[in-house]
Amino acid sequence: MKSFQLKQIIKEEIVIVKASLTEQSIKETVNSLYKTNKLYESILSSVLSIFLDSKYKKKADEFKDSPEYKELIHQMEMSTKSLNYLTAKLKDKIDDYDKNISSMQKAGIKVKMGMSPKTMWKEYEKWVNATTKASNKNILIKTNPEWDKILK
Image: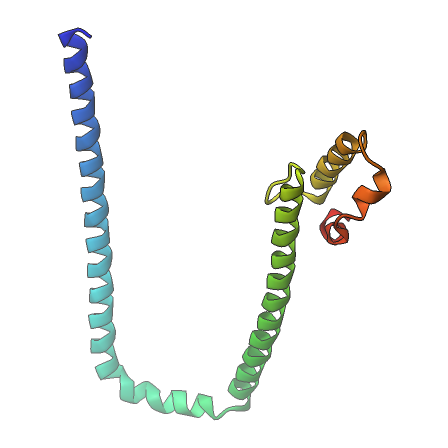
């Protein structure tokens, strides 16, 4: 290697290191500004609460006793319960999907996370066609009936 090429490589590495240091410095500055703004907001909120607290506290207490407020709280609780229920169901479905994907991959089917069921079905058919040359098709279909959950 010529000394010119070595010098060029060293110069490029120095530029890359300086660029990464500059980028890191910019990120630290942005984070510092973000924290400073949060601090200013917190201080401003505290100062305003000193002056406005007593004036609006009475109005807030009156609103908390109103039937509209109680109805809104009730609706929020119902929404939270239904969201939690749906989240649990979705988690179960995702766990089934993950388990089926991994078992299909272990069997040799070329499927990936995020594939559509149609694409997965095509890969499954390719796998069946490739493996049925040596075996009986009925035996292969019975290998894992849970695959039907995501393939159809």
